[in-house]
Length: 171
Image (cartoon, rainbow, N blue to C red; front, side, top):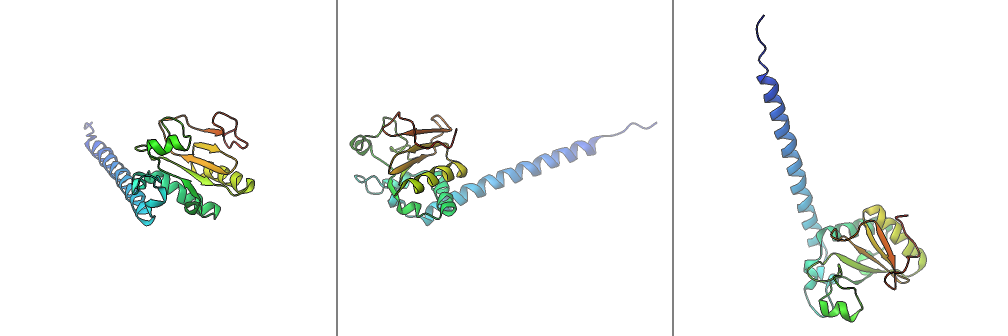
């Protein structure tokens, strides 16, 4: 009985592995390019700290992409409602921001969005969680959203800092 040569099986598995790995890498590169393209379409000055012209350029592309998704799903003019984006350490102290804020340069991973009333605020909170935001601060007149993965995830908090939020999409 002749012995079986399984070389063709190993070549097939190797080829499949290379094809799948290549497809994964191409999808990652395209996703990153899409994030960069999205950022070019929006004027980053809307994220500027009031005391540092041009500081909004450091804003997280992932954050911008998720804000665009939020705008699309809610129909709200999210980018027109941003009342705080990037902050210098000085500006963060001036507005009473926490130490190591996700707003602060070089983090640049947070925004506060005006919520004109409770209905809008609650819709922003729920849709933000659907879009993938995992850190949400809930104020009476604004919603804080950030994509800082170096901090606790799936959390919501109220203001003043440390109080319970009126609405929590994670419970």
